[in-house]
Image 1 (spheres, one colour):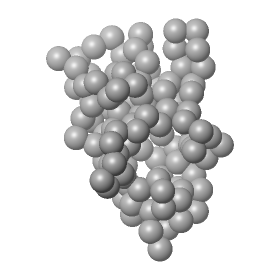
Image 2: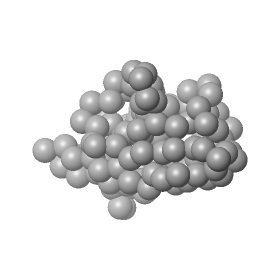
Image 3: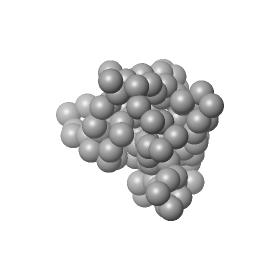
Image 4: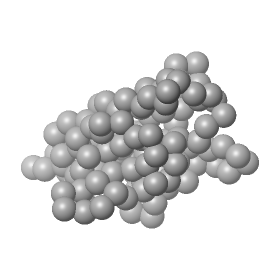
Length: 115
């Protein structure tokens, strides 16, 4: 059974940083592209980034390019999202999933950017 657990969220001031983690189990992790998504209050699910894989490098939505970095540690079955220069618009519940639509996503981790 696919199992993804997000962690690392919190409250941070604008301009601050957080590193999210996505721990995976129950599937062939090394062969799977992992996506990060987020949902702001009152909004739908928004795709944020994906790991490299399938001949394609890491990809990011335009609003986070240059500020967020996605990486993976296959030995630990974990994907990370390093988020720097955070803005209030980055506030939301962050999920990792096995598709751009958020398949198999976990419970999410809350990120709040506020002064």
